[in-house]
Length: 445
Image (cartoon, rainbow, N blue to C red):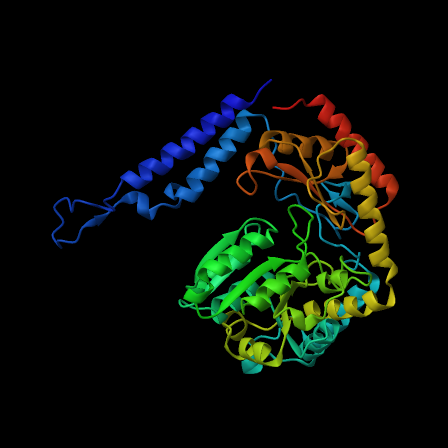
């Protein structure tokens, strides 16, 4: 049965609600005889259940209930989440985690965390510049800098805050931030914080970027181009040599977010630069996260000494934040060592990812522009169908998250599969077989 009616009803309700909020200009009600002469604030401005965000969330929940959809979010994993996990007291094949090289849960990585917490305690109890500095911080940063073959690196306690604070501090009102339209939210928030002018360009469209720079570069002081090494929604990547050529010609900085490409791309998992065999210095700002391949938490910036010194002493998200706990830094440091010692993990991740992509395409599934490197979407065409298929697979012992509108356009709603080097071909075959059966039983909405 078509779900067009309920979806259109929800859309109309959201649009009508937005129009009503726009029309309601006065934020204060008459004083109503107040002896102080101070205007009385409308009650709706004091209630969280009247906040536009909560009202939109309520509408979405009500619409999902009418469509008979089960909320697929906040599923609780009861142990380590790798190629398999335990949810609701049963084991499932897991495609919803970023444990790409299987280091989260590795006994050697666990032991590094245990040793660190026993030696340093559970918190460094201060910002690093004040009294939170520990030897392991420097060890991790030097290891990241050596991995990228750059002068230095600095680690932040939050991956999201790494982009927010770096862009928010380095750029200002006289500057320009150009970014891929699919860039992560953290870069957008950082751009807003900076006060710089922000312009998006079509996904992976280097010509569109070049055109923007031709038209606008002379109007600004500093310009930074922000792209990702591997896009987590589509599993595709940018043409790095082309972006480097453009940034050099227009005298701009190039910043690459390697949250999903480090540990995945390149023969040794060293990321986008290894994939294209380009020198590290071709890129001005390397950014990445510790929470995926590196089995920890937080983010890093790697680059020249002046860049890292500036951020270490002045970026608010580093300067005013507590330092990374030692037991969080230690697993990432150990994971870096194991990446060098066990290159077969990267090779198996590459093999199993390509196998998934090839088998999915052979079944006629729409995998978009994925290159088959850890991230493979299956585009199903509507949010209702994506949510329904996610639930159907979960009932069959397979955990995969749906990506729904407005995170992606409605027609691009999808299931997003994250592969691990620990997945097997048997698990992939079972998953795709179950998906095909579920899709056959759920015709297009």
